[in-house]
Length: 257
Image 1: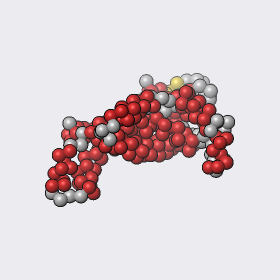
Image 2: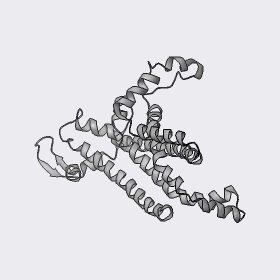
Image 3: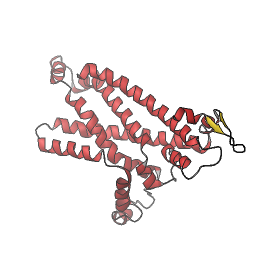
Image 4: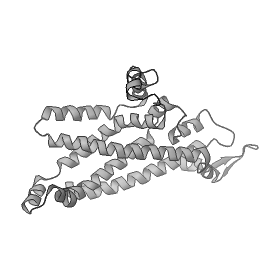
C-alpha cells in the first residue's frame, strides 16, 4: 500500500489522480532529506555507543559467573529497561534532568551543565541509550556465553597470550554477533517515535516526526502522499539493515551453535 500511495499524485487544481515519482523526488531534498540525515546520524551514534557500553557490561556479567544474584538482577533489569520507552521514558527524563528537573538544579552549577538541553539531539541520544544499552546486553550475552572454554585453553597451550586469543579466535567469532546486534540497535533507534515526539517535538529533524507531521497537521493539497513516500523510504532503509542482520546471524550460527 505504501508503494502504491507513494507514487500516486493529486493535481492541486483539478484534483485528478495520476502516477508520478514526484513524491519520491520531493523527499530526497530540503527538510525531508535533513530529517533522514538526522535520523541516520542519531541512530548511528546511539547504536555504536550502546554497542560498546552494552558489550562491556555483558562481558562483565559473563565473567562474574560466581555472583549469580548480580547476574540475574542485571539481566532482569535489562529486560525491563529495554522495553521502557515512549512517553513515560520522556517524562522520566524531563522530570529528572529537564529544564525544571529535580536533579538539574543540583548539577547545573558544580558540573557546568548550564548549556545542556535535554530537548536536543544530544539529549535525545542520551535518552535512547537508556533502552538501547540494555537491549545490547540481552542480545550479546548468549553469544558471549557460547564462547567455548576449550578455545582459550587451546590458545594457552599453544603459547598464545590473551591478545592472540582475542585477535585470532574470540574476536573473529564475536564480530558477527556484535555487528548484527549493532544493526539491530540501529534499526530500533531509527524507528523510535513516541519518545522523540514527547521529548523534542519538531525541534530535531527526524524522519519519524516528519512522517507524523505530513500525515496529520501539515497536509497541503497535492502533498497528501508525502508521508507515505517518507514511510516507504524508511521501510527500504530498515529492510536493508535487517537483511544484513539476517545474513550476519546466519554466519554466527555456524560458530555459536
